[in-house]
Each structure stands twice: as structure tokens, then as C-alpha cells.
Length: 317
Image 1 (spheres, one colour):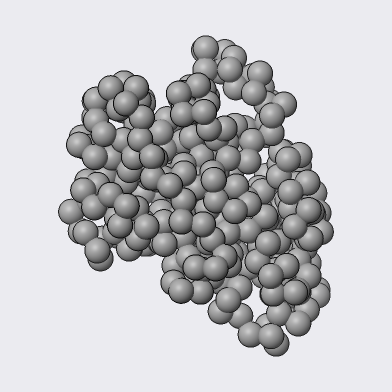
Image 2 (cartoon, one colour; image 1 turned 45 degrees about the horizontal axis):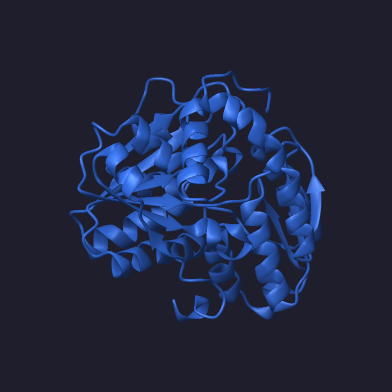
């Protein structure tokens, strides 16, 4: 992935004695919250953009995103000198909207969920002929995200488990394929929020996959439909899928802020939340955690602390 070397950071892999003792295993955090644009999404967006021709880009690019893919696309488009229009759901944190616009893209706020923003973006793409850059259901995007796993195995060769947040599945698909080809014995575990766990349900082949879509503080992984390309990959390469509650996620955010002095968004805290909630059942000696992003709206910290202490979830849907 030489194409990404000048675009993305090789983010640190860190640990914490306190958190290791808390969960009873060595935990290594891949700090993608410290990546350019504050999240891993720049990897897939940049790699996809590098594969497009000038003809494909001449009418600009369109994307749909709850925020992090938006910033990745905006940054990558600015590097290529092309226009970008990003459709974002109404519950997108203001910080992500402003950051997207600061990278030079036009943000269009529409729809109550990612799916509605996605449908609006697809309609716009058909009318304008712009190139649609999918946030997860694209092999090049998955390949870009796979570089996270490649870096982690170079930084810590003795990992035996990776825990990965899952929205539409692009991140875990890329990571799982890379890991299973490089070190097949490493377990890959996906994590979804209980309020948006459609891939979790499909993975476990539940009789009626999916639940009514609910609000979640992990809006970055709140997706209503699994990817057409990602779901078969997940079923083939991923070892397990688990879900976490809102209070689990909130507690992980607080731990990361208090103990590692890192501000992590809900989606970025989901993997660690899963380890905290399942510390006795996730069997691992050296466990890798993907901290996927840190683009948190600071106005949410108050009720996140309330959730961590056992409060209820405000209406976010």
C-alpha cells in the first residue's frame, strides 16, 4: 500500500497497565483516533481515490456518511483537486459536519439515519453522474482499511485476538482478510451496538435478522443494512460477532478519557467496550483493540458520563 504512505499516519499501538489488570490480559490499542481526520476512514477513501481515473473524477465525488467517511473523502478529494459532496444524517455530530466542510467538501444534512442519507446521495449521483464513493461496500475501500491490521502485526507480532467495531463491515472485512492470510490463528471478533446490530444478527443467522433501528452514541457504526460485498466476507473470515449496550460503550469512553487521556467517539470505544463487558469470555493473552475514531461532539460528554453511571439513553435517532 505504498499509495497511502504519504497520506496516512502509522498510528501508535499503545497499552495501559491499569486497563490490562482490569480485563486480565495484555491489551494493545490501535489508536486510529489519532489518524489524520481523526479516524481510520481516510485509509479506505484515499486508497479508493488513488485508483480512480481523471475521467471518473471529472464530475466530482459523492458520498454518504455519519461523519468519518465524510472527512476521509473530503480530504482525499482535496488532494486530488476534485469537488466532493457528502450527504450526512441529521444526528451527525456538529464537529464532524464542520470538519468535513473544513476539508473542502459540501455537507448536505438529510435523513434521520445513515440509510436515508445514503439513498439521497445515490439519487443525487444518478442525476449528476458524479462518482459515488461507498463507505464500506467496495473492495478497494476494504483494502485500504486492511492496512491497519498489517501495521498492528508489525508493531506487535504476538497478538492472538483482534476486536473490531462493525458498521457496514468494510473495516472488519479488510482486517479479517489480511489477518487470516498473514496469521490464520488470530481470532477476529466484530462488535456492534445493540441498537444497530444487523450484521451481528445476520452473522448468527437469527430467525429474523435485525431489530427496529434505535438511537446509539456510536453513530459511526449505526447502519441499517449489511453490505452486499462485506457480509459474505464477514461470514467466511470473522470468528465471532458480539453486541454491546449503550452503557458499555459509555463506560469505555470514560475509561479511555480517564486512564489513557484520549477522547474517543462511541464507535471508536465499541471494541474496548466489548472487551470490558466480556473480559471472562474473550479468551486472549495479547488482545488488539481497534480504536477507530475520536471525532466526538464535546456537548455529548455530559450524558455519556450519565450513561456510564447507569443512566438512560437520550433520544438520538
